[in-house]
Image (cartoon, rainbow, N blue to C red):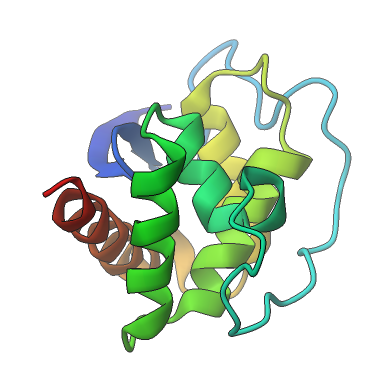
Length: 147
């Protein structure tokens, strides 16, 4: 079983792992406390009106990576105003933050997130084709908001 390595930074510094689809020896296929879960409900197109981290998964993801609430609110608004597929990105952020085991390795959490939210997107390569542009747009928005 072989790991193909890390493929990209996700939302201000989270590392994504692209795997061949099979876990390394001794590596769990998903965190031990995970259960088979359905994809989260679709996110609305409207930005958060409260601006609190708990109200928007995109803002929460940004804050969880160490950026300030003001930068993250700005980045979320910027991303939502773009032509980016925000519903999919919000679903990825929500699932990663709310449905995966925070004690599990980040790579495992993202793998479970991609496998669940982007199911049917053509294997890991297809999932990366969807997720990479979304995370790049968010990173760009964060950098723009940092000034």
